[in-house]
Image (cartoon, rainbow, N blue to C red):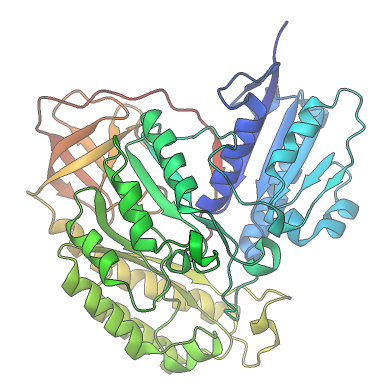
Length: 472
């Protein structure tokens, strides 16, 4: 009997990506053996289409809505019989979407990943259309089914759900709930499972990673540094990377791991959001520019060769020309390796929505272009400084831009958000970790020749998934 086909579209951040991978695991079974279902890359061939949405900011919401309507058309011209919408957008606007999108057969929220099984197993179509539950009801567990998508050698590992911060511009706690940290043993168990499947790189993520464990009972609490060390000690892993650190005092033990542990990558992602005291106060970030400078200086000093990624918002209510100039000066001073710049989105349920002194959209766009231009020059200089150096590169597969060229990433390039290394000078396969000498550099991407002769074994095949967006 022919299997039914299911297609997934994952929008937004890596945290959403993990949720989608859990739903892929639900669809296929923990070991890819769910009776009657198989993945398809072609949405037109799928009987069920699942769109995991992002609802963080205006552009992400628009992308989610456009994608839903695009997939809904396949109920007319494709094989689609059921369209399922999940994630943050449906968690945030369940009633509105239910009324305005009659094409959608089922809605799941941001914590209802396992409920997809009810829909797939329902042969009599009796499952309720609205399955949006309480976002606080679920925290991912190592025992949950999950199929890693994309590069088979790299995976995200979620440490917690939700967030306890109250940043003025952010609505995420409203539809993701308060922070719920996973027990350290469960995180390590999943890291071991990933390593057993051939994963070499684990990227530790949550909404507020620096706060990991603070919400757990004292007898089950572990520090972030302790958890990172335990994950890095898992046999088979080569790179462990830490994302989304809030800019507060960093534990000495964590700095020591970043500086000295052979498998903890000297890479930090720390969204700073702004550098003007006035703006940081209006954003309700709980600190000022001086503390941010101290954090940057301390980390640079403690971790030789640190790759530092951050993110900023331009155009937040109240941002003056002087505030923006402070931000530009700060970026030029800090010389970050990678910077994401976001245009402020005026979200109706965010605290900033009620603030005065809104910035005009044209001004926001001009400031975005200016800051990106400043950072591009810094990135170009840092990239060129790598010419002639030998780096370990994780081979991810054929380049999306050039099918005949293999591409990978060095330790200072995180998946999905940073540049790549295009490879020449030797035969390579997806999933290998190879030694590469850098020969050319663009603003963000590099070109290098493979120089080692004893590659590590290629890993398992990748499972593809349509992934769009990069919102944080």
